[in-house]
Image 1 (cartoon, helix red, strand yellow):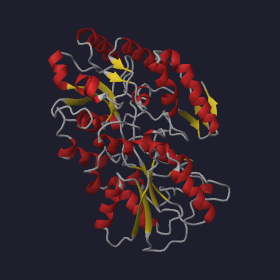
Image 2: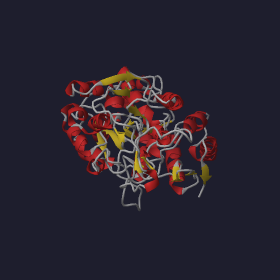
Image 3: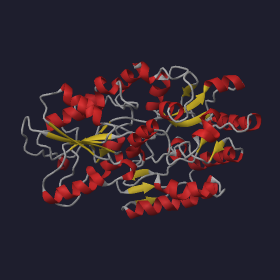
Image 4: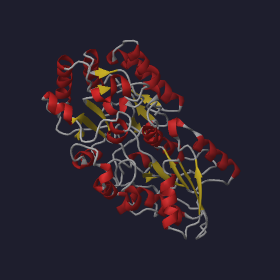
Length: 452
């Protein structure tokens, strides 16, 4: 995520970027079934040996907190970019370590995209970097405690190769003060959202119900519509079908609201947006759980007590809502670690411990930790209403058909779709070009493409 906003917003954006730019969930979470041929063979273990931890600057305090509370664990802490903004630094270094036979960190914070290569050997003679955590390292009971589908980006070939740090489930944000002032009801369906957006355009021109100009806007809208733009059918086959009705219905809806000027083709995080038209003109925003604190509070500076969150929207005729996910990183343990006990304990603590997660900057993927996070007044006092039920409901509604792939889901959107919108083209007429761009990028990293 590349933003020109306040430092507070940047802090979260760099946190979310690693996962966001790599795509997210790939398959419905289930208990993996490993084949005998995939049996994990740990390196020779040395109890009490030092572990090396790579973390980004946002996660550094958490690792330091663990070290302080576990003084007997010997740790070497290294700060790196955390795979933010599509960085391949970690992958490049692991390939080097594979060639030299040493140097691998024991525990790493990264993006879901990292797992696509870390769960596979980088060469025929190498061992996959990430250890299968379900292979007698993390209890199944702990793995089952993560939000539904949140470990899907971690699962390949019947094993779970990472633990999800946080998720960014999409909800419907709205300015309750303005909604009450204008006499509007919060929509519960996409059709109601569309109708209200057109009504707002007529009755209160200049006010907005959304934006599609950010590099992650497709995750808020098209992912929430269950559009098969990045749908893995198997590890080597990617379905890209933007002619699917779930894609065209969202394109049509947004085109109408863009034409009415109720949805802007600018990005919420684009340079100057916070001042002109400004956050005070944003009536609604379909976006991730971190929007509340890092968009409305930090970037837009909307006063406390105005912003509220509503559950993900459904489509008429559909009984269950689905939603997208815009962010969330992962922790991996190296298969080369000579102290898997300490490494696994650290990764587990970072993702599940209330001692850290209750005060984490974003919504934890681990359900008990998420409840502790919601109970922390610092995470809720800004809002006009209680966000707990909405956040918990949405966490289990993230559609797992938008897959975690070897490439970023932001590139084609940013390079093809956003420039087309700037030129005045509609989303509907741009879908074929978006399809081609995704397909070309997928083929370049070895995927076979399915369109139906």
